[in-house]
Length: 322
Ligand SMILES: [Zn+2]
Ligand SMILES: [Zn+2]
Image 1 (cartoon, protein in one colour):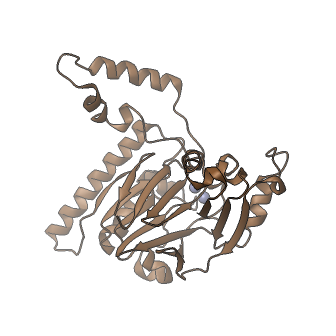
Image 2 (cartoon, protein in one colour):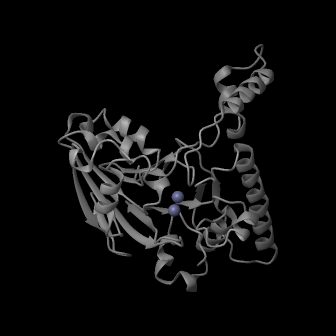
């Protein structure tokens, strides 16, 4: 595989655990619908929609990108806690690990998992922190201090090294080529275009994508071109996004428009609204399906240059191989 992308956190803004009453309700409905006499339990469970069983996931932004010889992590939302636990089985557990951690920006939902990322406490590990922003060390020192967290920055076991990325300039992480491009967000936020062995992944979260046309995107247009997989911000439904101007988040139809125009092969929509139930996210997915089918139909009728796109709403633990 040239690239493997795993989503450890797909929720926007705030970690959002499922309510015990919702879990109870789903178990009751699931049991009612299960026919013991002629159904296999595992295939029955696998066939259930997210909204009827595990949900889309409640942890915030964290994505792992792997090539055969390298791994990078983007953002340290609450999803990074479980990734950190998994890394302990390798060199990070022995104090011999090196972690390359990139940040899009430092809003809480992209940072809140950092104090629970165990490799950072283990002496001998090296944590390389990369960002376009120049204040990453200041942010880390702010997180690891009282009264916010009991372990002060200077007592962290790992060695933390800070690296500045230049906007729109490629940087090599092993065989992975990573280029930051600017997104549309209230605080400057940088998406990443990641390439290896002819495959390309674009990470476009958090963005309102106010600049959607080729002309408006200008120097940031390459983030959306020659892309095999794009992960895009769909915090809101289309009508909510129309009301929440300058909130810094988009809806799935906005991402689809760009993808259909630029020929992006596959899109996964994440950064789900913490206020949205799994049912509401599933409804937004259905509305997006109607929108997409209407666009394709319209394109065929009027012979417009619309490219078909494979897409779905992302869920926690989802892994895509390119
Ligand atoms: Zn966010
Ligand atoms: Zn943000």
